[in-house]
Length: 491
Ligand code: MCA
Ligand code: AMP
Image 1: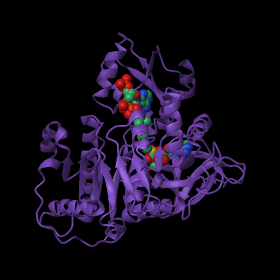
Image 2 (image 1 turned 90 degrees about the horizontal axis):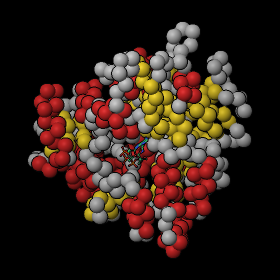
Image 3 (image 1 turned 60 degrees about the horizontal axis):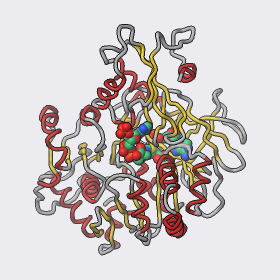
Image 4 (image 1 turned 90 degrees about the vertical axis):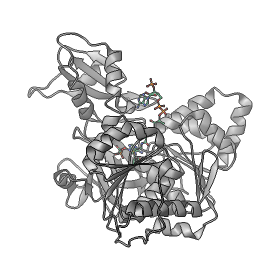
């Protein structure tokens, strides 16, 4: 049996999940996930890597289904509840999912698509659980999960991790950050990415701790949950800390003091998924007394670098490789960089993903001599790595989400009034970067509001440009390629 699920038997009566103030024990989770597994197996002895997609709000049902898919031998494909239909369709088609389990509110929207794709659509409130099936045994190298990530190609790629990858990613963090059964963490992150799935939920449940879910992020709801007094751990992207700081600044003095006292008793607060501005680190320290632990990771590798749990954390730095993670910096000429020299981060270890789903060429291009090429540039500076940025201007990080400029450009070009376009990320205090688009519309300039509405039916809201300009032509180099850095200057 998968260790994560096996370990849950150690603490059957402990609370595993708090979801809308309802407490679910580890026993509840084992029972429900086993029922989901039996339902999915439906007489078969093993799902043998069948892809099972699910569109569920973060909470007890989400985890029950994830664990159910794993126990039945399937591959978990979590979908994002905020994505529009075309984004969901892309993942369902790409993975050739066999079944899709949904929260009832999404059922109607998905009936026609499920029919068209021949997917069995199951509504979470009407699942008919058969008696407990015998669960399959399989090796740890079995594919476990596919998460979609944007890269330097226009369409997102499915990152496949095995049970061994996932166990290694969890175990490393549980040890490095000293997770304990007494811990209680608040999850505010979306559950179609590693940050929420591995760092928050899986590490907590591996440790016998409690995960509390907020239905929707808002600073007010986060602070209200903190003030109840049980939560002692928090992990988020820099944008979330920025929003919390701004909200805190507008609170009354007495409220601020109560909250600061409460935060001071936390065991650990972590930031990641994007560069943490030193100003945010300092503001948060003034409010909470905590120096945020900044770490560096990626969907393909889980977490690779971390500031220390017990020793001094360096602002603007992401620490050293986690145990079991091998890291090298490689210069443009292929030489391994020495201390004080810049290079691309390359990673090896049991944490590194298996493949991009059904993209052998993309997979092999992303490795060199067995090392995974992250595309992130860094430097080793006095025993701590510092991230310098990415080696591609076409990858944007906004609110902790990785966004491909090429994907947005391709959609924009399908608009009848848009002949050409260029998408870039502009530096932004709150979001890290904001998406901006230059449109070339020779006949008639479309109404930007209408373009925005139209885009939101095709792309998730976080990929939609927040700033537009119109140009007669895009800036190009001598071979006709759009020069993105020059384009940024026009904004
Ligand atoms: C939303 N808005 C934005 C953006 N996103 N504006 C500019 N840029 C954006 N990126 C606007 C919305 O359009 C809306 O305005 C308003 O903000 C509120 O939208 P809402 O969706 O409610 O925003 P939010 O709930 O405040 O979301 C902010 C957020 C979210 C909570 C920071 O972006 C988030 O959950 N980010 C975390 C992503 C994550 O988990 N990444 C991990 C992947 P309007 O109404 O005008 O539209 S990276 C990873 O996993 C690796 C392994 C790692 O290292 O961790
Ligand atoms: P994703 O592919 O969505 O998992 O995002 C991974 C990317 O987020 C990395 O390749 C980095 O570019 C970025 N990232 C994650 N953590 C940090 C950090 N602490 N500082 C700077 N960038 C980060």
